[in-house]
Length: 377
Image (tube, rainbow, N blue to C red; front, side, top):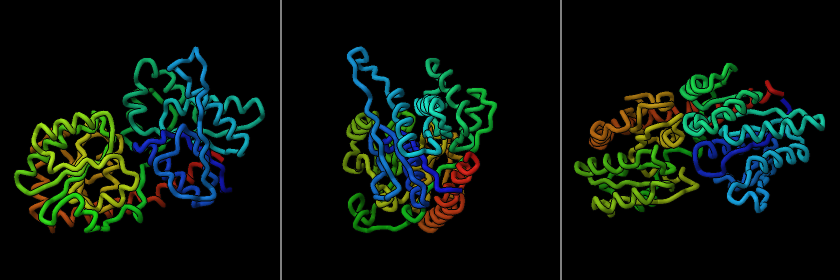
């Protein structure tokens, strides 16, 4: 395949869809493709220079009639068209259905008037289908935008099934899982880093998320509180979001403040994760669970929910443990047992690392995207 010119449209925030879009773009640039990010802000992990990486900021037009309803989707469509013409784009790859697949479709239609054929791919990540897309005000536009894409991918078989059932999509949806760079996310324990969060005789539970209700933060705090009764333990909370203040208040009111570290949003979490002993993710919904995969790659056993796409990432009892998202007792018990048997905890962590390398390594998954691009072109 010729080295393609690829436009990537994504949310520039640290959530899973934005992270995967950014890491995919960086990997494609390393392979010689020209990659153009088209969004309203610099993507969170786009921190390295590569001569094949470009960023085009979308500036929504201002007009008094628009007020707070500035039509970003239209500004984005116009920008995609502009970048496609100026940089001879072959493909626009939209990560998250709404509004990106819609904007890509509009750009594609505009380009037809000048004799250009722009291929479009939509990658479905989760809440764009299970939450936002099924809202009555968005349902039909989401269904249409997905259907008219030249190719559709989903990050898990679970999400592929959800999409077919919810939107009656009759076209094939290719499952291409999320991936992790196992050279960056590796079990490189840094004693100086760990000492920032826990003493040598203390255990460390880690949670990373966007602090939304679906991440089930009250259960994270409750599980930690119970484990703390058996072992001196610290809780490291990484991220930011709408539930942060609620969690901070709960931690304070329960007298746990001295043992909980709020680290905030972090760009380089690959340096933080190996400091932990166990990763905790009791989400009420996960279409894949990228944070869990990154923790696995760092050699951490993952205690998570038995819902959604997490079954495709974690082998229960081998690379981690899956429970009902509200089963505080079971999650607490398995963490206590892991802390009491370092050999077992290490073996589960090693299995998790090997699973991440074997099935979700960057080269393997990026190769699947490259094969899709080749088919389209």
